[in-house]
Image 1 (cartoon, one colour):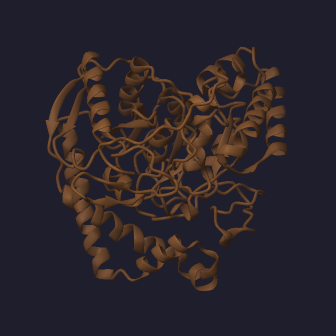
Image 2: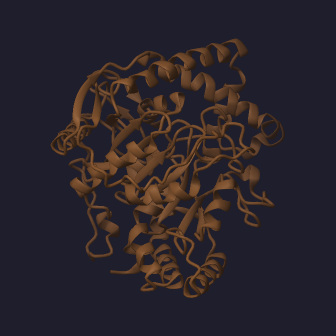
Image 3: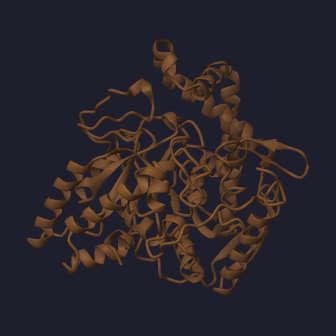
Length: 482
């Protein structure tokens, strides 16, 4: 096994035992990037010299007995919207082609303090405003989208080009690409992880979080990322637990909510079947299943966009006025649409959001977690990204993918996407685990129990380091067109 094939947890164990050096691991990951980047294009900038210096420093410290913890010497990818001192931070836009911050974002600073090695900047949909990440291709099928806006991080993690990819999630931008690329993606509770130094999309909906290959790795990343930050107005001053401590605590007696509405509408039958099988496996592990009806379901999408669009337009107002020609057409048009939202409509949406937040949080008076699909359909065709359902309704990626992820953003709830199988065409399917506010440990424990029991393949066949064969492209499902 080559070092880049290790999970974060396994690599950390070997480095702590001095059986693997940070330099050896980083060199392996950089070689992997060089091998897969021509096809995947997950990175906007591979920071080879920066990574080499950080890895050498980590090696000296560990050799000298100054081991900082599980992130020490671990290669990570940083999404373009996170500031990095002395490194161009473009937000994947020509508008910021020359923007070079003087200091790190709070999360990057924490991870560097923990000893992490930044191997590069990962692609985002421009200013995180989209769910495609057009620069990046899906590692399982390069003719399919990687999802977004954290598509670069998801794709990089999926092929072993980093062990943690930083993401942001305003309407699903961590969980969507995680589901489409077959990785784990974790959006913590609103306020749990600082957004200082992360380019805003929608300040009242933005979350920062990790993408990893395993739930255990996500917990280790969260241990380094989480914490109160007074410079972030949305940051929550609440105690931070050890998210890894209870991962193996078992799930017997945990109550799982099974939606009878909302997550059951316009879903690929293959996705529904995979999620049902995941629930059955969880029941075998001792979890109790309870049907729940989700409140205000018909209000979710309208409320999400009535908040997201004007908040984004507000942040971009001056840049759009001065550099409209530098934005991509889809993002510029979306920002212009947001600028036309009336203040009264925005305030009405915030009131509606308060009701959604209250009633969705009350669900967890009777359940521990909610289990549902992460997205209703697997990765769409990159050349024509849309899905037409049997009832004749056609949805683009924004409409289709955000439907199932928006509630956790509106309610500020922790939500995890974990792989739960594949379509007949070999595309990954994601299982979403949603929990009560600040119950990240419970969400991660359930996700870890499922992932450990299910043991789905992690490597895309065409990029499996253990195989020389390349997977061939296959046709789409007959149940719908995409």
